[in-house]
Length: 336
Image (cartoon, rainbow, N blue to C red; front, side):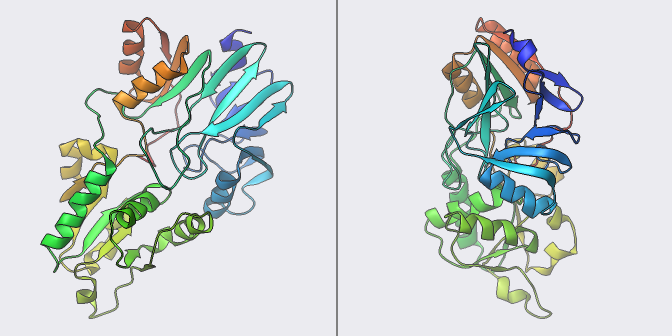
């Protein structure tokens, strides 16, 4: 079977005609296969949803228990047949429960990566490269300028600043799903055993990570009572980036504004956000990891989506690999 007949872009998202299902659709559909729980990939309103147990749980936490008409949990590595098409979910290393989706029919194998990274992350299963005929890769950081440093080194910068400025609180902006829990766990792995204060928007997801065996250590609500600003001197506070733009962030004593994101490689972005201490910690593959992954899949065709598509397509052309941009819309960088 020709690859373009097995998966094709439609306004709703990637569609499989023989299987009659979509992967990460951006509009409500009858049958959706979801790679992970970030809101640009996991939307409510589908009639049937197939995803990993963790992704289904996360969707319920974020969208409400009735987010879909019916759900089915996929085990990693298990093949499920949908209208004669074999599908399996394989680890993507992006966030807890994230998966690539392998679609196989008529002798053709296509892997849709969803979002992924290759660097070590103690909060989720590591990415596993899958040999295939076509690899559909994200390209969030698909430019050679994006080469992420070791996350442990960035956490070292944060802890050094905490030691240098014990009178100041350190406010770390980190996306609620995945990034916040990873930053907290990296702090623990670096030997930081003090209470970490979290914004209320993180509480349920942190508790869920704990329930799945991801130890985050002592956490407490980042609630500042009148006259208690000094209690947060020297503390690390983690919250969603949106919270740092409102009055909540001004409650803390002379805070050091930090932001954990792959976009912090771009100094102008850090300045625009008023970030004093940028932390280059990303949950997406950088340029070298994208190239490495393409080579490891041994795919004859590469389809590139949601990101800096053209540069990666050009690299494929120079490497003698067929590449094309899918130009899918509706996918942002919630979990960068």
